[in-house]
Image (tube, rainbow, N blue to C red; front, side, top):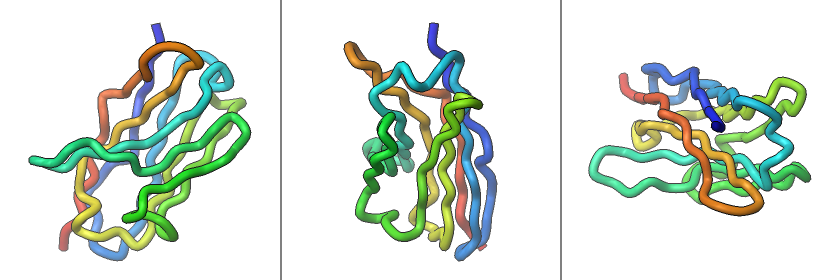
Length: 116
């Protein structure tokens, strides 16, 4: 059973920064890619960032230049560094793991609120 545990969500002022962490049970090298998604109230879940085992990265248009995804294979952890946060970044952020075959695995989510 694969478990993903996110942490780091918080209340932060506009312009502030946060770093989210996602710890995975077992090696993350067994997955094609790891990703961060988010879902705001009344909206669909959207891709924030994705990183492959080869360290190729992809970002949603709304976060390009502000967010950075990274991974530490030795710690089985994926990070999302979020800078220049805006109120519209407020959402529950989910970590995901994409296996070679089958559906992705999801964490339980961590709340990020950007407000003054």
